[in-house]
Length: 359
Image (cartoon, rainbow, N blue to C red; front, side, top):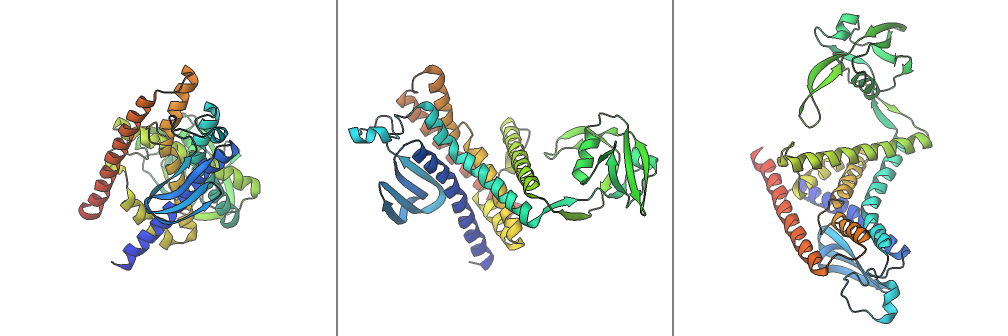
């Protein structure tokens, strides 16, 4: 086995184990706060590597690092309990408390991303692309206005522009209305009026769309923006929200067929990316961990019975109907959910192997 493969595997196990720990810790902490007893807290599945019992909880590290679980007292609705255990029973808590325990796992994954982003922005700064013009497209509005490569956009309609993304957003949202650009060139500034044009383009999913543009590309000049505590907090929340939204949209597009399911990556692909980011440095690895944590949280919210989202769906039905979902229905749904996850896992592993050997 080559050193690269060992590095990828070790990086993958450490990162995935950490993300699973945070996820299960969310369930564990909320269970404790809601007065539910916890029998087991396990990282991984299968045979135990090591375990230790503290109080009523057995803490376990198992051999298969592709998941984890928190086993609570009275988790099975038909479980026989001693009278002394009834106050600690999960199934005897209100539907609202049970929903909070379920939701805590994905929320802790989101919270982890916020904390990582905040730490990166606070101590390393925020990398930004400068609003500096690179190339001009022929017969487009920017070229006709007299803008030249190397010009810097200072403001649009009197509002300062600090990043390329800010400028791009203002152009896209213009709806074709004329915009006043303040341009910096050779230590002097001047104003030009530019009317964005509606042009064919592709979005990040590769879909054909139309958007407003003026015909410029970025020069590629970047810098590090130093942020105060409040700015770091705002940026970390914004980054987490935007990545979560993109992930949700991507999943929806895969389900509807707008994006090829071949875009899905499995454990091999994730291990490869994790190893590459670890080699690139701590900042790159932490950013990747934050993105992966958001993805894990969103995927767990899918309404598949064996996932947190499926359990939340059952809680929703119970809250509306005022009675628990029939136990037999739950069992069948769990079996179907498990089958769906197995098929999905086999498919993404097939995608990974295809990338390695056929791309």
